[in-house]
Length: 314
Image 1 (cartoon, one colour):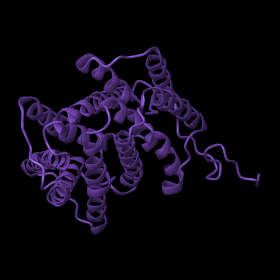
Image 2 (cartoon, rainbow, N blue to C red):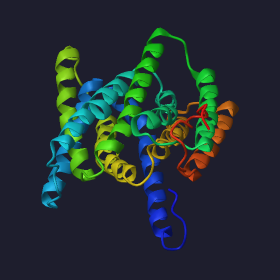
Image 3 (spheres, one colour):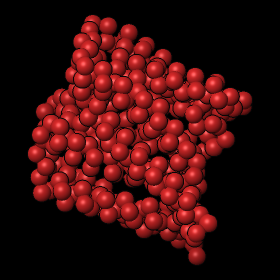
């Protein structure tokens, strides 16, 4: 998001609108997931979400005659991402929200920007600006304060938290991998294929791990799943890949710092969860750090000058 001047301001505004919409949608998905998994086995809920979303997007792609990937490299990337950014992380997240609050799951997942900042130099050979790294560390510190003042220490919550962290690390790797491999692939087609393939893996997991459980659909769970499918999958992932082609991965990953703020506020509003002064202060720190990261420009420096570790050679 480093464009400047009158000629590029409309483009910058479109980036900001897309970014804000993505934060709002994904900030709301945490509570929606929490609602769904109260009535429906988590892998089944995630599988249905991705199946319907994938069919809708691929139907739209066919109707609009969008270009499908032709190279084997692109298909291989789509297949890998179907597992690493769709099936496995979301299976873990849906399962985890049976045991942890939606706001807490969002907070744990918000460590992803720092993980992306660590992976970007290794996987892409690009410099993450030093001021962006400092801002990410400060923001993550604010989230740690929030985490350790709110997290319970029961075994089920710890397992749920570990599942969220595993999903976060895999998603961080996937962001950088997608930035490298999907630049030339249509975002709608790519998202639809990943959702559909991811749903197949999740349905297999449902058969293997949840065959003993029955779904009890309610109006609330149906409405929450519809929101997750239409907005959380179809719209959000298309916007996500559109932005990923236009801004740096570490910048896009800062959505994970805003998302928990939205999740905490919605939890307080709809589930009457108490918002403490510590939570308010931590969220303010997060928002300030996000602003710093988004303003940072990816300057060209020596590859060895990464994450404040300078080369010994001049």
